[in-house]
Length: 209
Image (cartoon, rainbow, N blue to C red):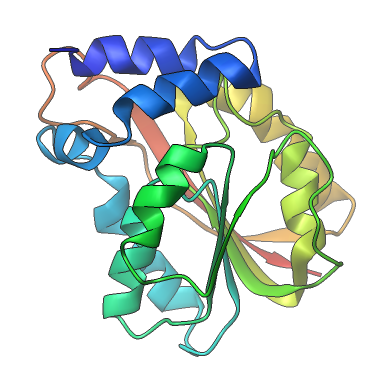
């Protein structure tokens, strides 16, 4: 049986899209159960922040890096039904499709220009995606482009990832593309994992101009 640390090493250590897709292909079936067992924090926190800042349940939401659709499924329970999900992994999207939470699921690469027009969404959230081996920093500009003026962008960043990705968000704010609305204090991503409990992250919430 592959351990959580081994799975994480494979996905975060991927150096090309093909390797990353294979790593998620091997993990898709057990992903939710493995992360639930170590108290994966994002599904507990992200829906709460979306509900705080996106008060209209009919809002058009983009789940960028939807994975298995875990968070989308929770948002559906809270009454959000206008969700679009994108992910690099077809295998993870297949699991997301079983949730029934998404109006549309599309395979897309966050390293590339996304096939959506400017301001297509009222809000976008991206969780566990802007991290080494996954989406590159410039992908954050694509997400900001697709959020309408006044809309919400929510991004998770681990403390190690902040060095590479935080600068792009800072520049987007300097360029008056985004403004900071809220950021959480650091919290453990996997609080019940003996090997990974020291990995801390924050959730960053912005409004688009």
